[in-house]
Each structure stands twice: as C-alpha cells, then as structure tokens.
Image (tube, rainbow, N blue to C red; front, top):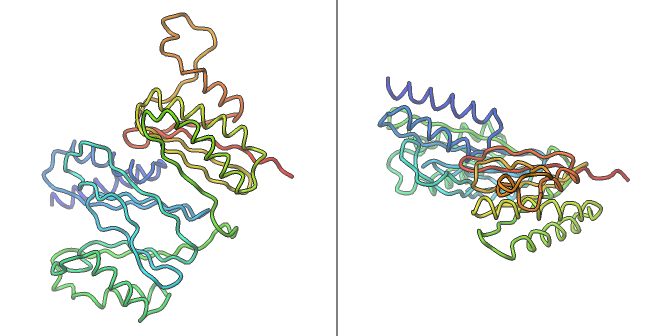
Amino acid sequence: MESAAVMGQVRTAVAAYAIEGHRPATVIDRTARLLTALRTELLVTCCVLALDTADGTTEVALAGHPEPLVLRPDASTGTLGAPANVPLGVPAPDAYRGREHILPPGTVLMLYSNGLIGGNATDPGSSAQALLDSGNRAAGTDLEHLADHLVAEVSSPQQRRDDAVLLLARYEDAAGAGAPRTASLCIQRQDVQGVKAVRNFVSDRLCAWGLTEVSDSLQLIASEIVTNALIHAGSDVDIRLRAFADHVRLEVRDSNSNPPVPSPLALDEEENAEAEHGRGLLIVEALAGGWHSFPNGRGKTVSLDMPIPAV
C-alpha cells in the first residue's frame, strides 16, 4: 500500500513539473526533494526524456534508472547516455544532471524498466540492447510488432520478480528542414577568456548557418549575459544556440537560482553595489526586446529569441 501511494505521488509530481515546462533534470531534482519531504524509506528510480520535434534535440535525465535505448535509421542500436545520478529518496549533495543528444529522423526510442529484462541478467543494459537488436531483425520497423516481439522474448510474467514497463516511440522530422541547427558551449567558472570564446562561438555558428545579419547583436547579448553569470553565479555556464525558420534562440544556464534583474541607471552608492555588472541586461533588453529567466533545478536559464529579418 505504501509503495502504491508513493508511486502515485511521484507520478503526479513528475507530470506536474513536466507540464510546467521544466527540463528533465529539473523535473527529477524537484521530485526528489518532494519525496524526501514525504519521509518514506522507499526509493524510486526514474527516467525523464524531453524530445524537441523541431530539431531532434533530446535531453535525458536519470535517477538510478536504465538509460534509454535507440534504434537508428541504419538499424544499429545504442544508448542515450546520461549521468546515472542517485535514485529518488537518496539524499543528493548536488543537483541532478542530464545530457543532450541529437536524434536523426527515423530513430526509434526504447524506454523500459529492469522488470522487462528479468532479475537474472548480469548486465541489464547490454541485455536490453541485444533484445532490441534481435527484435528489429525479427519484427522490422512496425512498433506494435516490435513491442510484441520484445515482450515475447523475455521471461513470462509468472517468472518476473518486478513489473515490466516498455515504451517505444519513433521520431520523425517534423520540420522537414534537413539537419537540425543547434550548437552548445560550456564555459568553466572563472575562465577569464570565456566571454571571448562565447563571442567567437556565436559568430562561427551563425556564419555557418547563413545568419550573419543577427550575428553582431547576438554576440553582444551573449557576452553580456555570460559575463553576468560568471560574475554573479560563480559557476560553469552552458550556452546553447538553436536556429529556427524565423528566429534564433539563445539559452544561458548557470547554477545561481536568483533571477537576473536589470538595474536602473540612477542608484545611490549602496544600491549600486548590488547592481548588475555593466548594466548588461539593459543592453540585452534594448537589442532583444524581451528575455525570460526560469529555474532549472538548482540554478536558472536565461532565454531569448532573436527574430531573423525577412528577405
């Protein structure tokens, strides 16, 4: 009864945080804190995966759960690697971390629980991958037939020691625009050359994508936001660029949960000590017209969209 009650609460929490739009690692991190507050001795493993159908960007976050598997368009199989992290209910000294991947159109995703493999497998991950590989050869690309084959190949329900869960999904290119245009960069904390690297990164990517018309503005915006993060957050800073048909999205992540606040131009000396360095966010607002800040676990993400001028 306690297990059923805890799982109901965990499922509700995961669904609620996901619907709010949080990233997978944030969903798991917040759910972990909720489970700790419930004061139960039970542990929960979890896998949360978010797939952006516009460009195939996929983020995976785990809490002691098996990594998702992929069946690629060339019929090869593999895993979507991510930090294992600890199960929910185990005190975690650091925030849960995820990892991003880019999926080519036609990729089949397989999410599963260990109950599908059985308790006798010495390496459940390798056993699951071998199962997916054999299922593809026998059942082809039809997901219903593939699921039937995978379930039939493993031990019967009477022999299993745990519930078995299997989810298959195929990603197709929703945008139909060919290869996705996405790129990321990580700046180490206290890296004095980090801001220069960010400007070069933005310039190189936008030039490669044929978007030089927004390059100067985005270089300045990115350098201001990253400078602010390096000074005030004191952590590593992750930068991601994504180009869409009509706009470019910039995301900057750090480990400080306090939202950035633009400073007015007139402050007394005491207030000025707390002002944003160089009034950078005023520059960002002037160039971008709008930006957003939202929590991502034990930190925040600053995001903005820069329109691409029509030709």
